[in-house]
Length: 201
Length: 359
Ligand SMILES: [Zn+2]
Image 1 (cartoon, helix red, strand yellow):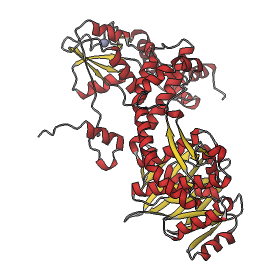
Image 2: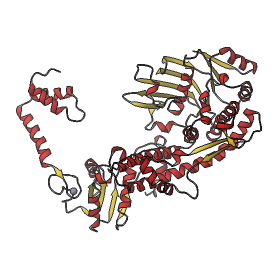
Image 3: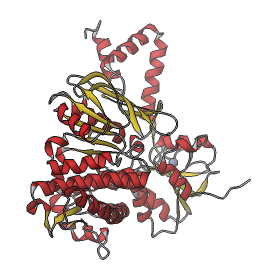
Image 4: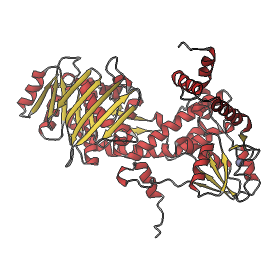
């Protein structure tokens, strides 16, 4: 591709490094920036630089944070006796949006999968163990994907934590709300029958 | 249950083709290389969501194309079922039943059972244990959704364990992680071994009956399931026993993925001691037993696909098969033959109506 200037070419080269953005889209975005007021670009650039230089990870739960401890860990109203273990930070946002949970979190940073070269040492597991070793924690909720690798990770964690006095729970797995029985896959349906609950009016 | 109509698009040698079938016997005739077996494979695909002959979906694209579709209308119960299966580079495999796409294509397996008899079946007796395991696994997966799920689970965990063994050798992971996989594999492994053992027992009597019929003989044949697991050896202990060997080989050397089914005749291995004719009787009897068991368990007569059998079988066995055909044992049947006059004559002589499709 022939670019009108070296500056445009440089911008395209940088923007197209972002996931899901090709050279064509990058060029369109660069030309769009040129059409806007200068302020528009400087604000964007500042926001990106600040995001990268001033965000860090919480020293306790590894969630994205602006200070040593994230806003959840620093919140005194949160229940410190319960920790919800998730794979990545976006999972915390999803659970927070339910408004149903008031405990703390722990971000593993992935799940165990030797095929992808990921073992326990690549995840934030030791820091979870030391949080539990303080004795303050009474329950651990494993909010991990219902995949084979998720199962392995949950199994590994439950073995790793078996010598501590902590209750280990996992999210209930069942029918999605609003789903029709007929169209539910057999595995989900089978599991829902086994883990059925008492009907409450 | 029968397949009324089939439409192919870019499937193997077919650019665009539409076929209509009779609910009874369908003779598919044409020169060698015209695509008779490919047509059977398309029917197989629609039932089993994969080819009977190719290991990858891509291998079924017409030369130079990057997608194919197979569409079919199956008469079953009160309302016809419309199936639409496509495989493209962009979207992968999509299977729709009455316009509704499956979330997992594997859920379809078993809804419309089918049995294929091909000249390659002789490999069942001659080749390694993988083909025999696949033969029994294919039946079990059609009959039992939990079996299918557990088998997929075992295979995925096994891949993870093998990757782990390689990474331990490269000192990138700790050897203690093996224990996690051993324990996770144990439950599907024991489930699969138990189901295979139970099934072999049930299968055996049906098989023996069919062998006697097709071979017209009283030879003593047997079929036994051989597993590394048994009442005294658990999967976890088996893995522990083999640990140093596995670490050296960097893969899992034993387990239910290496199980075998032992075929014997008069107390000797079929592979070494049986004549060509005995081997053919044995493999046809396996297929007929498969047909019978699927019929019993699902209450549906599977579609029967017979590839080139008149060319490969001797007269005596053909006579026996024709007896089953005229006796109404089967539902819808598809038979390929490069010699139309032979097929027509055989069915005409036995007074069985046949719908001929020339391609
Ligand atoms: Zn935190």
